Length: 302
Ligand code: MN
Ligand code: MN
Image (tube, rainbow, N blue to C red; front, side):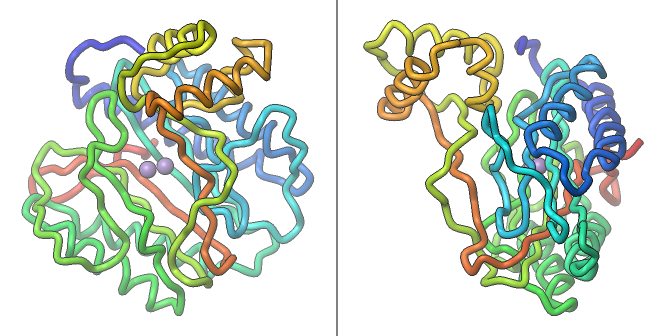
């Protein structure tokens, strides 16, 4: 990724359109028996075919897995008959970013749950405008999802996006809070309600497939420094998958040890796979929007 200062609104619009096109085309891939690894790699290929880069590894999160799951290399998991599958994808184009997600209910038993997340997203976007507070947007999502008899996931949030940075530190929860931060014209947000029939929050699992650069630090091992240079020049501050590095660094063991050292030195941040705390089924819907005078415009639309 090249640093070229602030990306323009036009570039964010283009990243949004690519995200929307890939999202819609990818729906045809989500079928019973399909491999999760194939799905993730195919979608990442579709983003590259559009002349862009994945802003993060494509997430394919099934049932009680809520987020941060991307298949590992050699992953044999396939989609089952009654699975609820979340596809979350991001596009990076000259530093401009888009982030969008949808849920497919293969068995047809969770239609209302999927609708709850989609309606939460729709209502939130309808309320987003300059001066609206993050606390009140969260309240709208919470009320909408609870109106369906489900719970919003309290500790997964939408986030403000800026050039080259997916999570700027300004978060938009799916619950009512007293956060007084007011949305500003020109800001870009990824808004992403999660709905569940479980306990309403996620916890870390032991599995980690996704990482990003965190802080500069001294690395003792030569391999670690090689891997770090590759990360800096290819992903910048954006998240990446261990699976991507394995295509570059053939020794799995050396790579594992390099990642371990980088985590220990806090050069990398790990994103553990997040699961619903009560093993509830989770649905997600996400768009990237631009705050404009009087409202919010969806950028992840064709
Ligand atoms: Mn996302
Ligand atoms: Mn997001």
